[in-house]
Length: 232
Image (cartoon, rainbow, N blue to C red):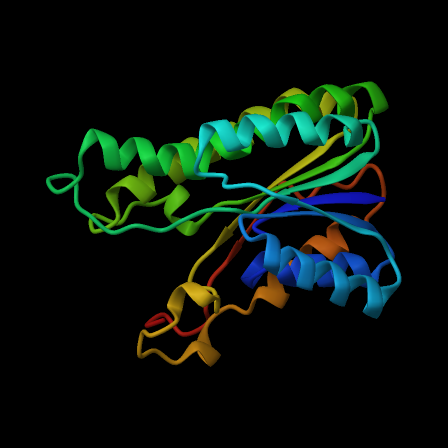
C-alpha cells in the first residue's frame, strides 16, 4: 500500500513513516524542509527497501498547498492511507488572540488537512477502500484557555474528521480520529520536563500500524492517548 503522511520528518510523523515502512508500505512524505526530506528518503529506503517519495510544502501557506495538491494528483488513484499529522501549537487566551492569529492556526491545523483530504475522498469512494488517520489532540474534545486558537482549530478538525467518517463509512473507507495528550516530540525542546513520562511517538505509530491489519468489517473509529501520570 501507499501511505501519504504530512509532517513526516519529525516526531509522530517520522515514527509513522518508520512503522509503515517496516510493514513494506511505500511512502509519500510531506514536510517543509527539502533537506530533511532528502535525509528521510535516503534513510528509509536504505533501511527498509521500500519507496519513499518526498514533496516539500509549507502547509501554512495557501499557495504552497495549491502546488502540493497539483503535485499529488498523479498519486491519487494509488494512495491507500492518508495520515493528516501536520499541526502547530500556539499559546494565547481569547483576550490575547486576534483574527489574524486565529486564522493562521485555522489554516495550519484545519485547512491543510481539508485540502489534502478532499480529492483523496473521491478516489477512496471509487476504490471502496482506504484509511484516513487524523492526528487531533485531547483539546479537540476539551479546551485550554491558554491555547485558544489551537483549541478552536482542533475542534474544527474534529468536525472534519467526524464528517469524513460518516460520509466514507458506506464506501468501506475507515476514518479514525487520534486524540493524544502530551507526546514526546521536538515541540518540547528547551522545556524542562520529564519527556520519558509522555506518550511516545511510537505508541501512536504502532496503533496506526495495527489498525490497518484488522479485518475489513472492523472499524477503530477513534482512540485517546493520555500519559499515565496525570501531572504530565
